[in-house]
Length: 547
Image (cartoon, one colour):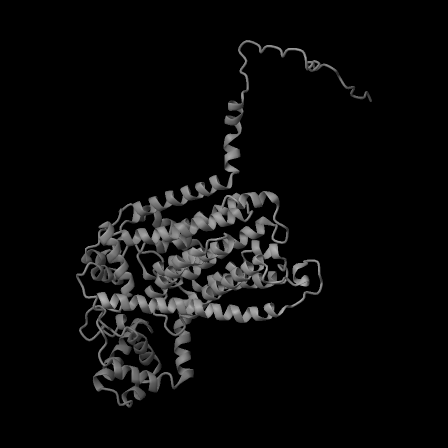
């Protein structure tokens, strides 16, 4: 076989002293400006700040499209009543959260637009989605993973609830942005001022839906952990805290436990309680301020829960012999027969009881004190019977769903209140995506059991990684604390509905779905990053300097 011989066909390179050959006619000289034009776009996209701006453009673009389609927001009878309260056409009551009506009134006073509450709702979600994308990108994950931050805004289960001005949606987006702001304070130095808007958002979330306290407890624990961690790091930088040799050496097999490390769990518990008290105190102060400015009528909405428990767990004979007012017991017995004929064992106030004493929407139930006494004497004193009824209601909620999308034809109550109707083409664009594609193909995406299972899996992965993330740089770059917080918050919120769930509407599951979605994005970013247990390279440090 003939071997290939090297050839010398190429011209000799010019000598240093010899002049450069002149370019041939018709040829273009590649200048520095032309080289910049050829490679500028890839180079620019490699810059972290420019990519952050691109994520922002995507978020803003979708927000504008969404607002164009659904302005001023879909509304049911509850939201229509709150709009009447916000405009002063109906007295303010505590049946619906007064803080939501007050915020809506303030927004309309500033903007003059009915859809200002929808704008607030979308802005809160957009800010959280953009910040998540930026944090994922700056953590070293691939760019396509950071796109999932803005991308979660267009998921079917998010779009389905963002169209409507539910208090559940207001609560969910406020909770999410509150967590994200606290998360930023953990990663970005000297950003502790973000705690102020974070606390305001968490207070607003609990104010618009009181059972949000179940979801807030894990968030308070996370906030307490972040504060203790920031305090310890500050003392360590100042040199007032000595780092044990064993804990500072990743290769050491035996770590030294210092007295400060032993006290750390107690500090976290105490700080978490402080955060929780600040949120609860903020809710009380907010309610007091609103009541001082507006006369809030008490309606005793909790009587709805008492009514359901008494009606469906106390036998008729025991109810008649209870000594309660005959008008009340007869009304309950008659309504129970109507509900059972309709196959409804919950939400009797609307389904069969005939609403309140006046028969109007949101009117208070008559004989509330007697109804409460029936609940105390004949419901809670029979725990097995009570748990059996509540388990049947919760099971129906847990494994099914309803009202996944609020269509335009359900605009009757909103029209009565004077709320404008949005773009009629919105349903033709979005409804097939939510109902026909997502709900028809993957119905589990709208059920609590699916998001509960996903949250449990994430908690399992977080527990598994706990023993493998001992190095200081690993902890600093890990999203497992946030994943644990979001998953735990979702679980607490779902199971917090056991004693109070009024229906199987998907809006009651929106926060778990949103929280677990974000947790999955963070978990995917860590998996694709593939460097959780590796030191931060110099290039990442230079990227972080642009934060």
